[in-house]
Image 1 (cartoon, rainbow, N blue to C red):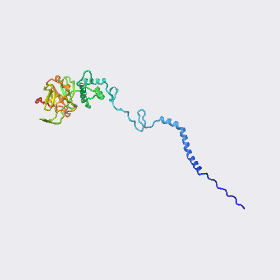
Image 2: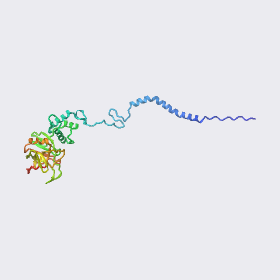
Image 3: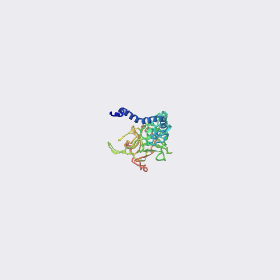
Image 4: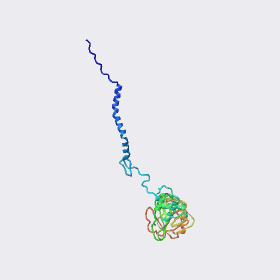
Length: 300
């Protein structure tokens, strides 16, 4: 009697087919998502372009991410006429600066408006009066300040007199109506000890009320240097011309002025003209000084 045949086991699919089937099953959801993204991409792009990121500033309003940086030059006051302070000055503006210096009372230079050494000294005096950087170079910032400046006021009024401000290092004339004119840069005593042949002391320019007690013409030699057209105030202290007038105190006690002014000043200042010197260590001058011994040995 024959045994019935044993059925063969079911054939398993190849391993490669199983791997392919598993990969298809895994990628199917991703493919669906990609199809959905492609279908909605135009709408998303339009929405994104319409709504800027929160860190971008629109119309000056800062977003959640912080304000944008201000534009270059923001916060700086523009020069008159809307020009930037770094813009070069035109010839017309330079002439305007010279006219303005003359109007404010600074010793004027060439009448035709040419910017010469005298105008540079006038500008230096203006920079000193306004506590600006002492360069003697006309910048647009200086030009702008010239347009806004007011004429300086004297420390004292009354009879016509001279004033010297040691703090600012300037000289000027004051008329009987109290108007200031002929403002000049000066260089006075350094306030430091010094030694010279036959001399030893401190290079001080005294503050107080003085008068021009003596006037000499031409170059005068003193133990401490040379002076041009000195106007003596007290002892050997004089207002005089010098070839070296730096923007800072540099003398042994005299008040140096530029040469172009010292050539004319003796004809403008008679003897016994009152002189007020102030600005010693930021202290106001005291009462008028009593008579002092007067000599003409200059201190330069």
